[in-house]
Image 1 (cartoon, rainbow, N blue to C red):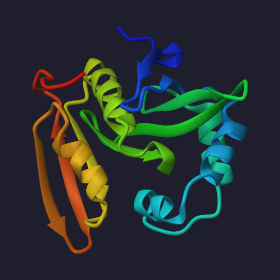
Image 2: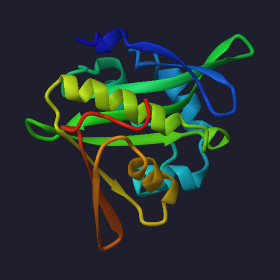
Image 3: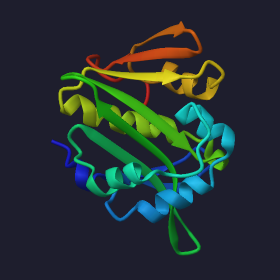
Image 4: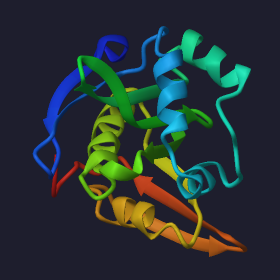
Length: 180
């Protein structure tokens, strides 16, 4: 079984940049604040469905106390000027026995480099091992990039547009094929 608390893999992005995808650490609060500060307003609205100026105290508590059972968060980091920086995050939160809501956010300079794809791959494998059979996500219709990430994943996808949200479901019961 994957040791999620100590999960760490090295990956190379499409642009050749080497990154580490690892479990969120309890001491990542300042790095997460810095990463949030580097996001453009459009990315924040696409992820949180609203404007937001920073992480809340509740979100900082989650960083410090993440249980890696009902909630899992991975971060994508690189070293810049001898300092580890977070360029993307992916997480899932259980909603019931066998489903989880999945979400991502990636710094704009690293869009279209495979960051969200890699996060989805690793989160999916971790979730499957823990009995989660489907990921669900809510995506704004104009967030084509995120919809493409889900559509090109290695798991079957269904989607349904209701009002101003696209509801996406990935079937994790199928063996992953296509990329990894």
